[in-house]
Image 1: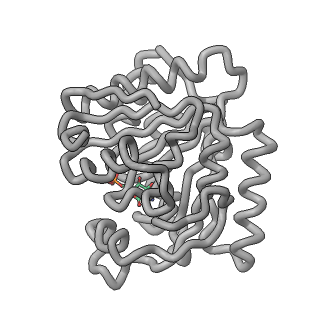
Image 2 (image 1 turned 90 degrees about the vertical axis):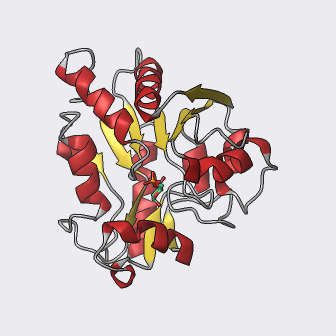
Length: 241
Ligand code: GLP
């Protein structure tokens, strides 16, 4: 793992943007894995600035989101399809038809999840996977005790994650209970894994991920086995290292 500690979230965005761009250097059809949440927003804003400045171009790139809630309409403002559209597709001027989000409304949810993994493989795999981290150490929606070899599948959200995400919904009762998420095995297949985190509320999870044992109780700790894992965090998130 390579760990870079930055002054603040804005610098995290800049350092991580450099890493995204250098990881895609020479790649004919870039395949980028996108995370939702507040952590990668400074990175997406920085990438957007560089697109506007003509320094990079994602119009021919393919994108795959990490996860989606089960049971909320795609056009719900907090569906991850909407969030990815708002924070990634539009600001990075991507082609919406080239960016996929797992289907949380399919009649056959597991069939759609299997097909999602196949689509990633058909695209040649993810060149750079952008990741945030949950306060309980989850990545994507792989909650503690997820299998290290898991592929895209349905998961039940923990009460802690539902509480963390309640800020996006009118009340906790409106937060979905299930999701479809890329598995830890799917994430580990990415060529480069790039995690961004900022703020003191992530400090325990970051310390456990980097300095603790590799353990299913901290799903992100599997990144210790990733051959090209880059962790870009601010001083507050690094405060317990
Ligand atoms: C959600 C997402 C994760 C994200 C996490 C942290 O649970 N499924 O992909 O990393 O939230 O979110 P935030 O960056 O807002 O703290």
